[in-house]
Length: 192
Image (cartoon, rainbow, N blue to C red; front, side):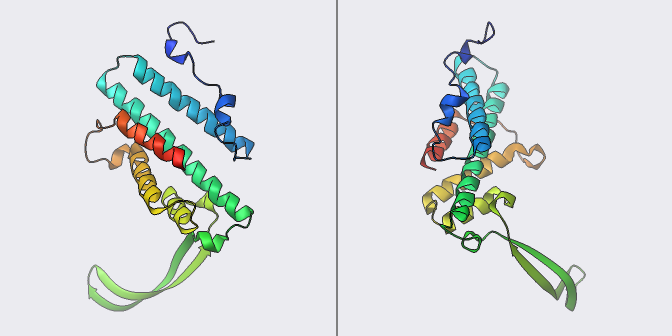
């Protein structure tokens, strides 16, 4: 039961109800975590819609929605790629997420103080999707045709927005988040 004064919690779906939106996920831990995150996102939407909030609080609530929606996107991509490999619909090689390491640099020619042409030993190893970054997951999902070019571009946009959580890397004041952007993200997630 919601505490007094939290009318925005009325009608919030239970996590069990939200799990039914993902009948294809057979991992109970992932399913529960997605449902919890979705419930939180829906709570934030209700909070933002039902209360008059100062601009900065509203922007941060919308940013939080974007970050958590991005996490759901990333988890769905990871699940789809991992499940495809598990069911042998495609191989890790098809997924093509590779870790590259370079060692044993040998200088061949010095151009100037800051530039040297050289050779290295490069080793590559296929990575499991669970060890990949969102950018790699999007490229891999496109490569194995889980998504198309249009959806790939939209997912990269979500990734870019989600990555704005790193405050130290921002070059402008954060006050441009909108519910329209959130609604666009939700439409993208539905197609995923």
